[in-house]
Image 1: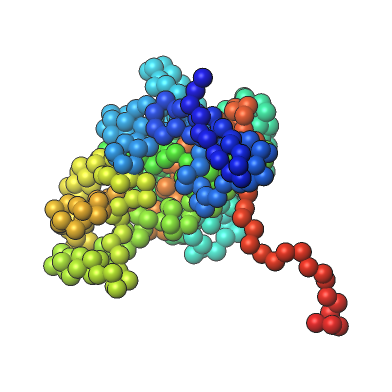
Image 2: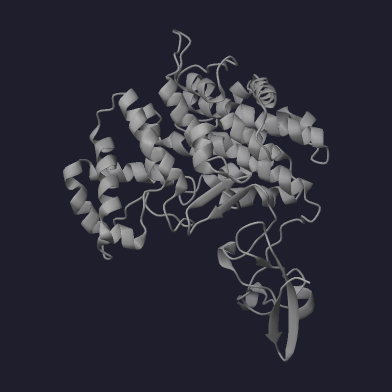
Length: 427
């Protein structure tokens, strides 16, 4: 018999089974708690609650570990590709060469958008935020591809999953093109997933576009590093929406809406804005002193992480990548020099070491994306593009879980008790 957790209350004892995972914290199964005691647990933000069982991603924040299906994120970013990592997340194992070729070909066959969606874009203002456009367009996909929205059909789920992964770069690139007044560029399926996205974003019909291999690899790594991150806010939103039986396009649109929040997907934009505020390397000591002052509202963005209490394992990969991109593009911008010197100072300053304020993935990804040529408004859209594969994999896992129920968090009610209605004339 396994371990149990004992709850003593009002003179009675209740035992609850302890369930062990393959790695990480055990969980206390409290599904019978309300029925036996009439009580709920209270956990704002669900930070101590396991809302599901998952075999996709494991994080050990104290040790700085991030695993996808058991593979360390550093190894995947260094040796894999985004397409291979996507296959891994969706299918549970690394593909053979034949499987990867077939998967990549399948994704490439779904990169086109229904032509009427171009008209949909033109209904937005030119200055609309790309995330606003992506929320609307992804949600509208169910109106164009309703032949794959039967979530009880595994074939439908597979087709819709492939469609979402394939079309998200096209949707994001079109959002960018619309904002700058340039014509949409159709996909070129002879290119890689990431190379195709770069061409659709920065290419123009008037001349050929040459994909820079260093930039292509850097962006592919950023996609890998953002592919999935366990039960974060947007992933939980996708699962919660999916638990009601909503179609996959609606679920991913819900995830995009949640990701748009500055506390979630906007961190790399905030980090870059901070670097621009500092301006030049000679001002770094002044801003570090401001960051140490509890009475100063200034905060160093891109340092530390809610989950990782050690070095963000994704940032280790980005350290190398940021230098490769700067060298390849011959970047000469004080903002990027600020980033490199601030990183050096933070890694050696006792204050940062003691507080474990290490540079995180957002610190590096923002400066890399800016160097490539993306405006800050596109940063979260790129995050959504990459995270789509994680959302889709999590959604598929949830739908296939026989123990999954519609999400229904409880509450601690602190409002008025029942009272009588007072007619308007007597108030």
